[in-house]
Image 1 (cartoon, each protein chain N blue to C red):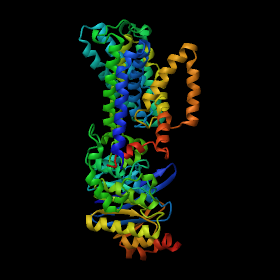
Image 2 (image 1 turned 90 degrees about the vertical axis):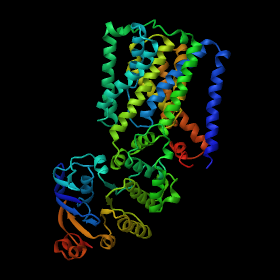
Image 3 (image 1 turned 180 degrees about the vertical axis):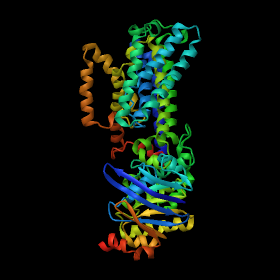
Image 4 (image 1 turned 135 degrees about the vertical axis):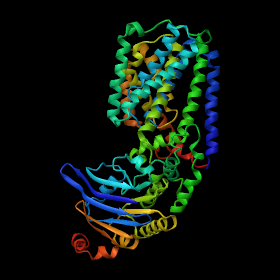
Length: 324
Length: 244
């Protein structure tokens, strides 16, 4: 099959995009570099959610909590301890994954919508604690003026750093999706009963997927601290979690890079529509309604479908990998 | 190998399985027959752990399995196919079978190693054995009904079971497909020494393949025995065979 060619083309395409992004800071004003950096951070977050939501079929409705836990852990270590910053950078994702494990342990016992509802409840609990615990988390004020290592303090430097992290996260997630674990995660999404009947411990696989996804959400949280130098409880509010979910839907949640597109669209919309109106979520709502009616497979799903000119089979690209 | 005693399962007030008894010895091909709604599929769901019984015991190789979840029972060597093709419609035939092979090899948790290089030989071997090798890269949902049912059996074989349970393997098949499937089932039993438990409506298939037959009616076991004995049984003739 023509997959070798196709694969080479895809890798070349990605390389071209990265190369373009590497030279961008020379060409465009700082403001746009900042927006792009925010898009990168949000992309990591959306891709991490898509591992469980799109590929795992889990209604991970409160993913923002783990983003917040990653950010707060890093922020607290950077601002309130004299530990080396690297400790904070590593502790953030680990704390997020640990929270993912604990909340996940309760949630995987339930199915579908009930999973999502319990997660919103438990996540909101974390949000409420963060919001109220003034002595420790700074309450609704959050933590400001977090000392960022000099190496990353300028926007161009953090741009390059976060771009690197995004590329690493993408490679790791790609490898996971193509591994036996990733394949079986998708099989569980399509038919959990059959998976159990062939001897797969469905809950354990889902739990591992949640831990991996929340780890990467924690990575995104740490990156947020690097860009903004501040944290606040809104990072854990359910509205943000909803936004991440919409990014996955918008980009195409059965595709690999769709969430990046979704993140780019939402962040741009928030930034540029936000200039003109406070009610930018209204525009988001209209887009979402149009999306459900006209592009049920998301923007990326629509593009791949058009390019291949065949039936909207979400996993076709994955399938072709099998034909050696 | 498998011993089911006084098994009971009710849904609200309806007793789907009521004092069912079944013995399957190693190497046997055992058929479960009975009119529609006799509780055959429910019985299979109970044996494979997809439903929990209200009473009675299920022993596999001398071990009580009625309280175990489906994936644990499967790991003990009981694999099944489903009456309605229960496959991964969006995956290729190859990947359908690979799922169970990976599970059998305990590699379902492997990260960072491309799945297309794991368990490939074993998967192709199974597809070849069931005659689906030339269709291995077709999307399962696009296969013909007969091929989907064969794929269903192939997925179960990926688990290397010692007891294979088939729920109406030839339902909805054309006469040629039925013949192919029977040949396949016989071959699995003869060549690979699999113990097979199946239920079926087609009496020609049942009496042509089974070593022993268990007859169910209203969730109850009427009798079990050799095909000749079952044919002669008065109650069976009244309940089942007499209808036709």
